[in-house]
Length: 389
Image 1 (cartoon, rainbow, N blue to C red):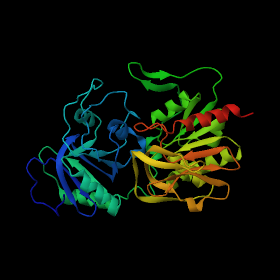
Image 2: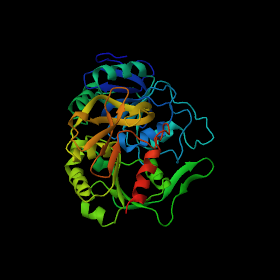
Image 3: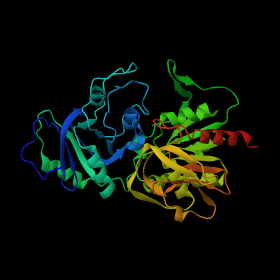
Image 4: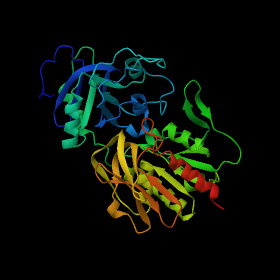
């Protein structure tokens, strides 16, 4: 899988992944030419590679797909979670083939090239995944050159000096630039994305730390009227919109770094008794706001098959996850009750406050891609707003 610093590239090798420890992994480059630096993670989902690449939570990361056939159904304009891919690159086992799907509008290779993202195929992704599981997610540089010629020393130096995701606030890089009124609903075959509008809907202000579009679609499908504001929105700006409830979105990077400006806002919202629902980074920020701590995980959770136990009744939900940090359940204060736990490693996957109308989950209940076991959480939140006096 690796060699020290090869003087000559193997035949047909036009791409390379260089880990910060000096490991060099050769393969066939695709997508954009050039190079990018990031943290190498792995995702175990069997579908949804376009949604994964455009999920803002993957900012600063190089995604290793454990499913071998990535790109074979092509790409289209509908299966995206944001207009610009957040992942800086991807690593796959098999070469990207010509698309074979009636919804395909463009091949994955061409899409990656047009979006400026570097891909690497022909890699033993099983071995790379085992390495990440054993040693943790490494920093690395991914590069693609049709000539197969690379300055290994220079690329390695770049991988070594990249600081990594710990301490990095990436929400500011992927958030919307301004306020947006959201009305799009869920997708249906042959009709595309619907519109969810109407009078009498509870008004949710969604703070965008890197929100996936499908999360916003599910809020509207559950019956909410949604206004999206940037991650930098102040308490006064949020309250000026007269919210019935506030949603804290998913997002990338270190929650403690984003929390420098996000946590004070959330604390004020809690003091004002505004109902709150958080997902992923939003879950971690809510935890920080009530005094808990977050920590970098060894390998993180990324995939569409993660079992989570609901502590209230023992029900197991199969969930979609994408996170490299977690709330430390042992640091939750007395008024914060753990509601969900990962059956993979026992890490915290949900909390609720006993003295406020606020709850959150670590996973992505809208599941794009993924299972649909947890859609009820959107309805729970909106029903709570409807019932409020």
